[in-house]
Each structure stands twice: as C-alpha cells, then as structure tokens.
Length: 430
Image 1: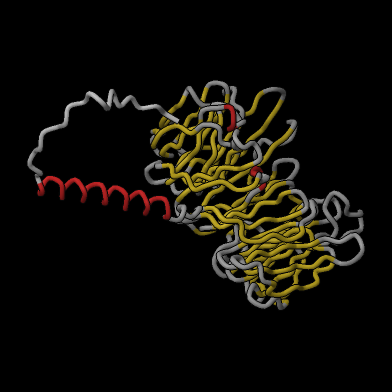
Image 2 (image 1 turned 180 degrees about the vertical axis):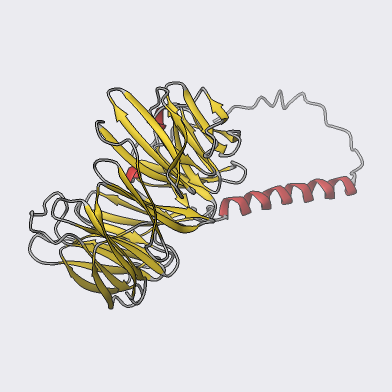
C-alpha cells in the first residue's frame, strides 16, 4: 500500500468555486474511453498465427529413402523381414494414397507424374554374378506399375523420357538406353565400352549429349536423341588418385586429383577439344550458373566456361553452392553455423542483401526462395526457419518448430520434409 500525504484536514482552506469547462471535459472523457477500448482490444486479440506448422509424421528408418513433389510424399520402406514397398502419402494431410511392393528397391525419385524406383542389390553388396540395378516406374497418382527395365535412371531426365545406365559385373556402365518416361517405350539402346564415369550435357536447357569415359581415359560422345556416336577421343585420366566429370552447360569439366593438388580441364563436348586448364591450388571445381567456379584457399572465382577468363573473385570466401536461378551461396567455411555466408549474383559475384549468420542448413524452394534452418539458443531444442528471397536477398522470419535434422531436409514450395530420429516430419512453411 502507498501512503499519500493529504495534509492537515482541520486547517485546510476551502477552495473557491470555479467554472466547469464542459467541452474540454467531454474531450478528456472521450480520450480516456478510447484508450481503455484500445487496451481491451489489444488484450483480447488472438496471437499472430505461426507461419511454420508441423502437419504430420510417419515412421522412418535410416535405410528408407524418400522423394516428394507438389502433392505427395513417396517413401521407399525397406524391411528386414520382407520385401520393400513404396508408400505414397498426401503432402498436406498425411493420408495414405497407395502402397506398392517393390522387392529389393533402395532408391526413389519423382519425375513428371511418375515415381522411378531403383531396385536390385545395393552396388556395394552386389555379387559378381548380379545383373545390376533395374528401374521400376510407378504411376504417381495410383501406384500402378507402368514398366520395368534393366538399368538405373539418370537424375538428368526431363520432359517425357528417362535415360537408364546398365551396369556390368565389374560395376562399370556397359549400356545406355533412352525410354519413354510413362510408357517405357525404348527410343534407343547402345552397348558401350565399360565406362568408369558418364554424364549428360545440355544445350538450351535440354539434354543434348551423353559423354562416357573409361578407366583409361577413352571418351565417347553420344547424341542424346538417338544414341549415335558424335565423337571419340582420349583425355588424361589414369595415374591419379581420383577423377570425375560433370557438365557445365555444353562444356565437359574433368577434375583430376593427384597428391594434394586438384586440377580441372574444360572440354568442348562436341569434339572433346580442350578449352582451358586450371592447375592452381584449388579445393574443388563446380558449376556456378552460367559460369564455372574454382574454390579454395585463395578464394572463390567465377570463370567464363569457354575461355577460363576470371569474371569475378571473392578472396573473403572459400566455399560455394549453386542455388539455380543465377544465385549462389558463398561462405568463408564449410560449416555454415560458424561462418559468414552471403547470397551473390552468379554472373557478377555481387552480394545481394545482408550477410547470413548462424545457419546450419538450407533448403532450396522451387518458388524462388531459400529456407534457412538454424538451431535456436533459447530454447535450445528448437529450429528457426527463415525465408531468403533469391531475387533481392530479403530475409523473413517464419517461426520455429521442434528440433529438426536440418542436414537431411528436403523441400518443395511451402513444405519441409525432415527425418528426426525414427520419424519423418512434414511441416508447412508460409
């Protein structure tokens, strides 16, 4: 209780009468009532709904594989006591749509309304007499089996066709075949000299050629549409610790590692003519939108894919991730949680927006944004989800959910799919 001093009531003089200002009194009363009303409205207003909402969960084992599209989640469930099966759930509700037995399947992906399942013994466990992997195509809407063929499907499949690679007993690729994605109709098939590596190159945004390389460096370029041989040649390959190839538009990038040095040679795919070579001390080489990036202790550099000319360089960065849509993430360390990370324009290397900090992982949203995931400090058992607009770098806080296994999350527009322990959690975002 607060004591208020009122003075001596016995000796206080009686105040003289004063005229009352009625208009002023009315204004004062109205102001007080308005303030009280606003306070009441604020107190009773519901909290702003979270933009991150866990929707449903299902059982998940480390040996399971998962894929998703804009309407469904496809889970390849392995089983020690029986055959594997593919189960389809509605993306928003978790309602079971269908399930189909797939035997010894171990890989799954969705493409153009078809679920492509890779089956057969795992390559590391396959016996010498194994016929190699095979692909089972399921209708994404019903789970009905559409076709089955020898060979593992290529992630480069676009449009209405899928490229399969057949594997021999040694594990090398011995054949290529192009099939209709939905009807399984064979467009062409070609037996090839056993290849250690192969890749698909594009022109104008669609597959144009396939390049295979043997263990001794014999390279062959095949036309993607009909399988015809375009060119044969030989590239330096053997005598190194490791070698690999990957496409950069219409160019073929060959990366060779010997001792502590990594070198890259870029070839024109049409005739395997060397375009340029980089033998500086680099950590790795990767595609960067329209350019090719080299990254390592000297920084990240964006190079013209035809001439190798350095277009831009960031000496303050060491690692790069291509996000698509001519956007890159650059970081000073591989561990995003402990390093400064920036969004940059792939063509110029220019930073877009403000730097990011403390991110543990990111998930590319096909709708032109990036979902950034990071562990919260208070409370410690939550994951914060932010959206990064790839156009202007604007960051928006969406909310938090129970701690997620950020490193293995997948995403489609408006949803996150993350394993956590023995469960798979689907979360609505935004």
